[in-house]
Amino acid sequence: MSDRVFGSEYMHWAKTQRSSRFNLALSGLGNLKFKDLEVDPDQLEITTETGYGYPPLIDALATRLNVPSTTLVTAAGTTFANHLAMAALINPGDEVLMEQPTYEPLLALAQYLGAKIKRFPRRFENKFQIDMEALEQLMSPNARLIVITNLHNPSGMLLPDTTLRRLGEIAQDVKARVLVDEVYLEAMFEQRPMTAFHLGKEFVTTSSLTKAFGLSGLRCGWIVAEEELAERMWRLNDLFASTPVHAGERLSVMALSQIDRITSKAKALLETNRKLVNDFLDARDELDAVRTEHGTIVFPRLKRGNADEFVSLLKEKYETSVVPGRFFEEPQHFRLGYCCETETLAGGLERLDAALRNEVARAGL
Image (cartoon, rainbow, N blue to C red; front, top):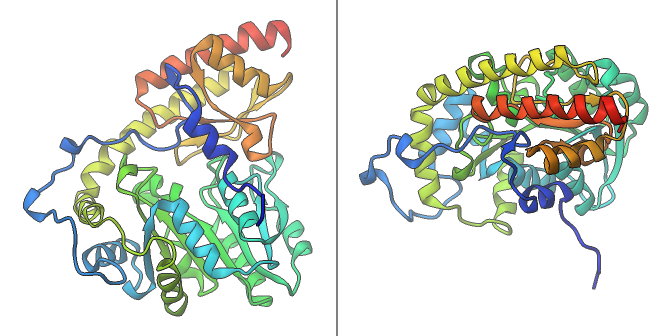
């Protein structure tokens, strides 16, 4: 029996770290209270007839994404959607090309599934866009999957359609697929582009209501894939989750019917908070950062000193948490989330400012 231990170092850190007074490590909107969701108790049920997908939820998502219902597979959040999709797309030993930096659970998942992983860069100097030349040099007839995030996690940067289309062409050449984690696209609200699935059958996309709407507890995630592949994922899911939590499915349908109202509050919060963050970054010489126009996160780089030590000191001495860049293979960076309440963000930025002035500038961490 194998003694290898699988899991996500980032998720373990996120679940076990002591909470800070000013938590800027979060990347999703604060959870809505049950009372904030207009719920008709008469429409709630605990169980329903078993099948592949709850039709009202599938139909609501199909309408939102403008895709056929037969291309949709529901899953427990984006993380499990990625697991189910990748498990259906690759076999042990298959070549998987994955962006660097990326969301660490994606990398850990590919390792768990036994993939041969190749990395292509998304560099700070190029505003975290994909180095297409480097990617093309890595492609081989053995490549089966290209994995990206859009908006990029950890930088929050949007990929242009021209890049996505080129990725599709490159994948087509070797009969590979492109898996796009689109969970942060939801935080673009009415500016949200169409899911990349519309660009061609080689695209498989995943997302959820987790990041943009404060609905993480519903675990309403989904995959969009061509019909034959979607059916394969439903069948594979019989081995993983089998039957979803039906009360969550019903609550998700209710939430989707109210998404415009929920969006209004979330959008206003992020617009206010993004300006605060950009003004802060403009004022701090100790940091470099690619400014984000969308989403909930930014990925600053400490110009000098040890960023990992700085992040630890920021938490212990200044009661403020951010995500260490080591979880994204960029140890000189940290990921800052600006999706908390504005008062919390302002307090955290004040302490981050003090830490930069008092610790980095003075002691040269």
